Image (cartoon, rainbow, N blue to C red; front, side):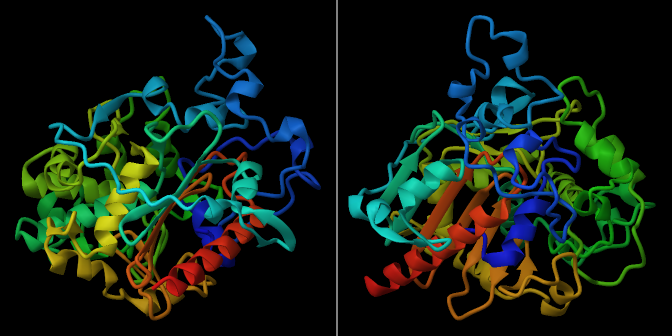
Amino acid sequence: MFSLKTCILTLAAASAIGPALAQPPSSCLVGGDKVALAAGVRADTVRDAPECHLTWQAAGVMVGLPPPPDKLVTAKNLFAYPFNRWTLQSTNRFTRTAPMLTARTEARPLPEKLDPALLNTKLSVNGVERTIADYADQTFVDSLVVVKDGALVAEWYGDGMTASKPHYIASVTKSVTGFLAELLIADGRLDETRKVKSYVPELARSPFGEATVRDVLDMKVNVGAGETSGAPDPADAALWSTMALSSRQSVYDTLPTVKADGPRDGHFHYASMTTEVAGWIIARAAGEPYEQLASELIWSKLGLQDDIYGAVDPAGKVYSSTALTISARDLAKFGLMIANHGQVDGKQAFPTKVVDRLFEYGDAEAWKNGTFKNGSQIRSYRSYWYQLAGEDHALVGLGVFGQGLYVNPTRRLVMVRFSSMPAHTILEYAKGWDEIRVWLDEKAMGQQ
């Protein structure tokens, strides 16, 4: 659904929590670990065997008081299968976190028009007749929410997830950061034409210093190749090590040490560290912590029903590139607001011009020459959103292990999928979800 064929497979793989994540046991991979994506992250089909499709409960992960030593989540195994099935829905139990909604407002549930047949209709997925619910169960999906015309029409939960349980959304966090930046630009508190060093002098000697804020928001700074090649440089490794349970390294200390991977070429260069720079700029420009701004300007206006929190580095910096944790229904509310051009419950809660800027195509040439240049269904990238080609002007936010937010304003369709795949992404599974996305798109258009 969020794979968008080979392009999105690569994107999902590259939207990484870290460049050196553990893979599932080789016995669970058909042919071993031999298939490499363009971004350098290895993946393959998971063997269709019971031990390769375990929930965290069935695997005994963190079960018991205390759990057995071999079932305990640690800094070394927290993103390895089957431990990651627990980790991705338990962020606040394995690392430092901060609440992202600092002032609780009245919860406004999504209107419900559930269509039981939607998830139980058989369709061809990877050449096999099956239901969406069956495919979700097979492909390590934890939460699946579909919203059409402002109402919840389908939802599915597995692996111990519930409608109100938050889940790690990995690099979908970046899309939230991009929207927050656009709000500040529209408000005059952030100038996208200014150089980074004017906001963060500490980065003056780094590759970010001479870049503009817009360059940073569109990932046009030539850094981070190690993140997607699987061979990180010291700065890449240091950035991701800040998330280790025992880390005392701060992102503030790491970013000034980043080195360029090449000349300034104006191309798209995927790098989570670039979004961490954006978070630093945003906080400096507004004079408020990132989490406070996000709460005031975004989350407090959406009527969230559940807890939302973000991971925090040792210096108290909330990550702006990854690790936001939120329930599927609440993330759907964010996507629905985008689809409705800033409206919430029929009222204009966000400036239309801010949301519309997300739908204004970015630099197509930068995309064609960038990290994921083989992605034929992506036209461009702007403010940490992948902009799809086509008349629908659909947007996608993506995260590793199968996280996705799909927003199609033309078809009034929003889809959220949380997963805990045993690998960064799995080719066959992603292809199947792409077929399901197309089917749901067509069904949504048919209902107009």
